[in-house]
Length: 406
Ligand code: ADP
View (cartoon, rainbow, N blue to C red):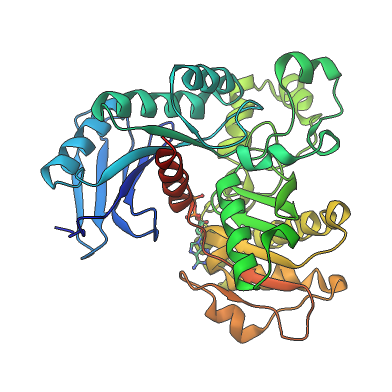
């Protein structure tokens, strides 16, 4: 079993998706993970939990009963934590909450009012919001007396100006129903910006960055003087870049075409844009960037097209963010693709040569598999940096800071 010094403090971080629950116990002081895992296919015929002890790498899988969901997964997790005495140093539970609406501009201790606020914001992202609320209520029940903290994916972007966040729709839709751009991946953009400033040995408050979080979901954020001033995702995480299965930006006129010409229902359109598009839709192969890269290398033209479209859209979005920033210190790559794909990084950077940025081949190849680094050549003023993200650590850290204030 993992050993901890008597003074260790740990935070249980929970990230509830619609049919999954990611969890980790983390030391907020140094980001070390004691245990991490994933409960998946919740509510289906064959739900399961897989977890890994970081100290010795042991991996274990537990099958849950058919149809068991978040509450049962958390109960199993609690039993696991208690049986291994991992609860002894727990000081808080930190919840990743996808949508905080306009109400939540920073992480917060969860009480009844906060639950009400999260419930209201959940109307903007029902699937995620419902799962987040389930995670919170199950954890409250199972860890009675332990402070629960909500950390919002949207909070970092609440510094955007209305010029950036409003849609050119009737103002009433914003005023009465909160229809606007919110942006997501906030904890990741915030974390990598902070790390990049440290790497460049400059203060975050004086730093201008463009960060590209490229995972299954992808977003770009323009960060001016350490604050988010624009981001590519919108009311929902569907907007902006091409992603694994999501289309990103499309012509809204497509809705009319699909409904009137092809008889699509609203649900079918939602599925099409969220689950059948992006890298998967173009390549016809997979949403997984590794598979697409391998297929492209073996001559699959649709895989090559998917990569080229992905990189073109990303480069265009990065270039567009020179408008709010005017001056740029660094482009940051993060997320599974950003942290690992030297090919995607090289293709994107090569299209931004007019900004006088470039790519050092050797450094680009080296900055993979958890390795951070500056991948631009020494002669360029604007740097290109790879920073492995660590959203769990941000959540643990925020939760520990809030608990300290109690
Ligand atoms: P999530 O958004 O679910 O957290 P990740 O950040 O783990 O996702 O990113 C998953 C993506 O990263 C997948 O498309 C995967 O193919 C890609 N990826 C991981 N490793 C590599 C690699 N070595 N080369 C290219 N893509 C990679």
